[in-house]
Image (cartoon, rainbow, N blue to C red; front, side, top):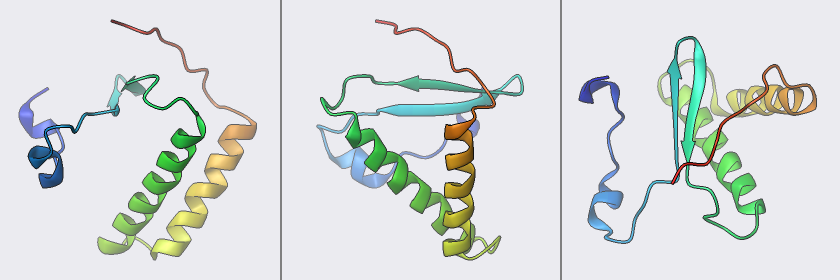
Length: 98
């Protein structure tokens, strides 16, 4: 993987000395691979807020690049999220590393 395969770090992150990364997601060998910082929040509900905010960012990006309007994209994301949540197509596995 080259530095060109990595997404840019937002300016706000660069200027905040207390910033830290909490999740990375890659596609490799036709699968999804995740690295996350577990235990960032005591209440797991905060991850729900993060996922909802992320869905909105993705939907906005679809609108910005002209693939579909943001609201339609958001509804499509939620539709498939709910379906995947109800009947997973994959069984995530992994381990917590130091």
